[in-house]
Length: 364
Image 1: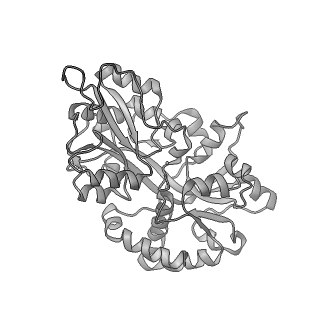
Image 2: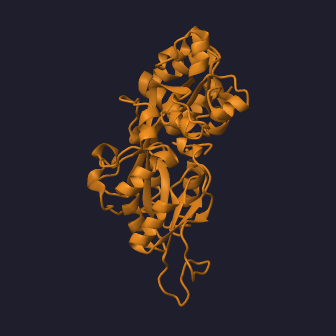
Image 3: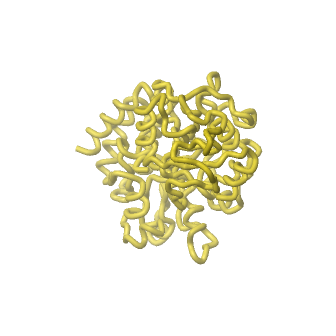
């Protein structure tokens, strides 16, 4: 997606682990080739939800001569913390996975070297949140939204909720499970969505009503979606009892893709009036040993080839305007036309206090 799991929905894809994704002979553990010549390995540090087709990464190697090594480092927050702690002596060359909820923290700590990636002109200005300085490059977007179990609502002859306001109605009491905003990316995104909808003061009253209506809070996305949510394949096996969950607008295609046989309709739906948009970025780490390789990788991450590979690997939306969505992703994913968003600078200013206040309201 990560206890702060992402978008994502990407956590639903097969995990790659720490791996070298193309053959690379004659290298020692430092990344330098035998004889002291320049390294041809470029290391991508990421949260656990990074996934890409082997064929696509091999094409990067064929184009540039660089082999990609992926170093997965836990959830998004944990991965970022490690890079902040090793600032100037990074574990890799490029960092992928800082999103708009954590962007200001990464930029304030100065862990990136500015670089304007080739192909950035094909990326909408709306997601170029560091456009003037190019310390980070936008790679993907994903919408954090409430998902619902279609069968449950059909059996109960009850319309599924479509908005934040619906979730506090009596007919949806004890139906929603969400993630802890202090430990989970989707949980934080859902909190931010309510803050955008109800304002600096109103969101607290909303959460009091949501708590009174029986919302269940768990540590992370994995437990919420794959254990407590009755609509997911994992939740069905675990006998989950909550037909509403905070997940992603791209979660329904996952339920289709990995089902055998594949259904003609996704078993889950999306309450499109409850969405917060997450944008993920990558950046060249300051002090990178292979700066040239890092720049080449950033160029590749926003290329049409990589952008079109992402949706069915990480279940996120490409940012490149010329990238086409796979048919399955487009058919079964929810179209979100309006999201409840908060400016990065406001997130930076208020995030810690919002989470602290939320914790005292909801977890006590």
